[in-house]
Amino acid sequence: MGRRNTRQITQALFLSGLVAIGSVLVWKTLRKPPGANEGEKKAERVVATAPATAPAKAMYNDVLYANAFEVKGKSTDLELETSVKMPSHNGVPLVITRFSNKGSWVEFDLPKVKPGPYRLFAFFTRNVRSGSVKFSFNRRGVGDPQELFSKTEKLSGPLHLGVVNAGAANTLKLELVSRYPHSTGYEFAFEGIHLDPL
Image (cartoon, rainbow, N blue to C red; front, top):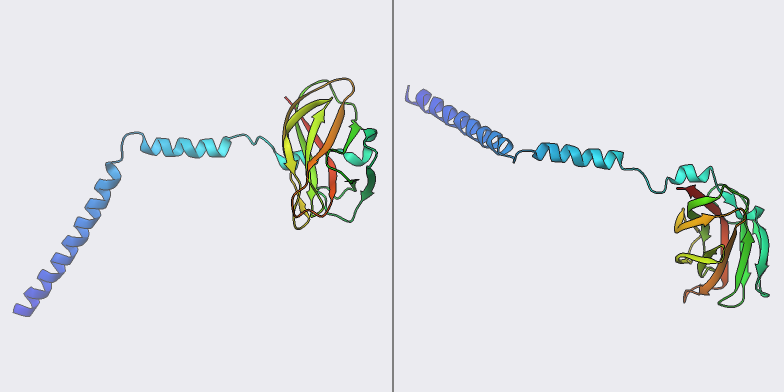
């Protein structure tokens, strides 16, 4: 009889302990400050519905390809060719520009677009021979210089350069401003641009 009572008491204490732990957990959950859950839900909604500033996939379907640009002007040391040897975002031939000096440049006439303000994005293939390039749209500088050096060939993705105002005719100038210490040349592999209307 004594052993049975001891076993029953032990079981009762164990169950009481489980009930106490459960009560503490319920109390901690219920004591969240008012609106805490709503705040979490609101944060989730913000993350889920925040618009992408650079919807890359959509841009890939609306790229102005550099291999269709006309050269308006260039420095005397420019060597220009198209190449399919390097990867590109859309599998199109890249325009390879090779220079012999820092400060060399090339300016392209762009295809006609509807006049107005646009966000300008550029697409390149980074590689070991590339340097840092700065951009001018209609002779006005736009954005910071972009370092295009990479030890391996890599797609740059859409590089957001800034906001530009397109007119009836437009030009894009690329100037090589520096060379990364480990770069083996002065060139860049240019795929094209995307103009996102504002």
